[in-house]
Length: 150
Image 1 (cartoon, one colour):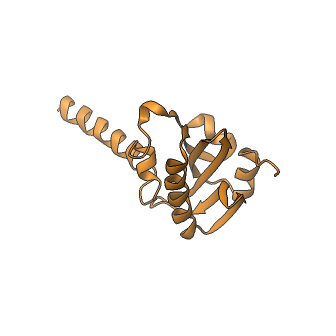
Image 2 (cartoon, rainbow, N blue to C red):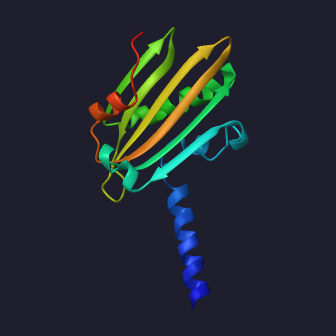
């Protein structure tokens, strides 16, 4: 019986972790389908440390990409932006460089957000994508994500 409970608990935690971005176009990006996980910096935080920010989930990936990979990621973020309820975006030279998207609520009723930042540096793109879930407002996220002026 203990083995069954332990196995169920492990499977549940894996499912919760893997489905954090469920239904988003960027989900595959977080799963390493576009950029191998070994080539990205990943951060995943859940729980009490996020309460001051009105959040319960923080998942971030950062990586350096060539222009083709940048365009794939940009396309995914823009596809998710189409379903967003509210958004703040910036384009530089026709390229998406900043986005904070307020997405439809999760099945559990929590707000979901997607943040994106990209910067070109000597032909390579430095990209950060963050998925957030909680009760924070989009204005709070714009301040937290430190939107830079052009």
